[in-house]
Length: 198
Image (cartoon, rainbow, N blue to C red):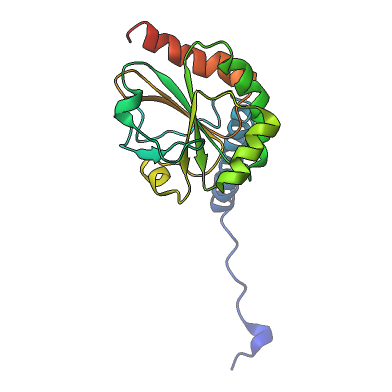
């Protein structure tokens, strides 16, 4: 009768199987490093914050919102038809809006395109005070206190910026604070395409 000390030795591991496993693990790590390199190389890409929107190339959602400065008056899509406009979503509660505001103000002063403010989920007094403190670059400001219209536009928060052509079609969208490079390399080229009728 055999005891534990007399058990037959286990068969030696196949060197081929071990080599195959090491090759698979090596290929996995090479692939992982490749993905990491790609991610890092794309992290400084100018359009990294330009989220693809299902609304690009489609009519801007209908809206009917009061003016911030005169809530008795309302603005609709029809009021803005005929010429392109940039619509900038902002709020007095938004730190990044303060960062981008001087850059947007400089662009708005060129009067190249109508510049519309979209005040999101803000108390009227707070929004007016903010504009008084930092300046008002907008041709008009609509107010969406409850954020219901923002849902239709696919607005996640503030700041966000849209370019809408004269036919009411959304042509460009940017999520996050805008800097001069974004204006120069994304917004202006998109506007030039509209102006060229493309």
